[in-house]
Amino acid sequence: MQTINIELNKNQFLKSIRKLDEKDKLEIYEELKKSLFPNRFEKLLKSTKTEGLSFEEITKEVEEVRQKRYDEGRQGR
Image (tube, rainbow, N blue to C red; front, side, top):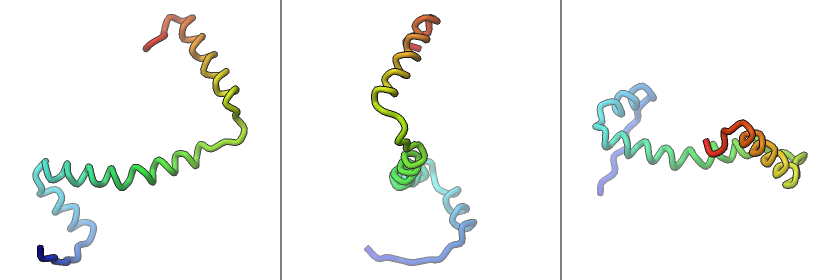
C-alpha cells in the first residue's frame, strides 16, 4: 500500500469529512470515540476524586436514597 501525505487545515478537513457517505463517517466516529473516551473518563475520575468519603458513608447514602424512593413509590424507575 502506497502512502500519500497531504496537509489540510481544519476547515479543509471538515469539508472533506462532510463529503463522506454515512458509513465512512460512522467509521471515523467510532475511531474518535475509542481515542477520546479514555482521556475523558480519566478527567472525570480526577475531577470526582475525594478522600472524604468512606465506603460505609456511600452505602449509607445509597440506602437512604433507595428508602426515600421506595417510600415515594418510585422504586425501579
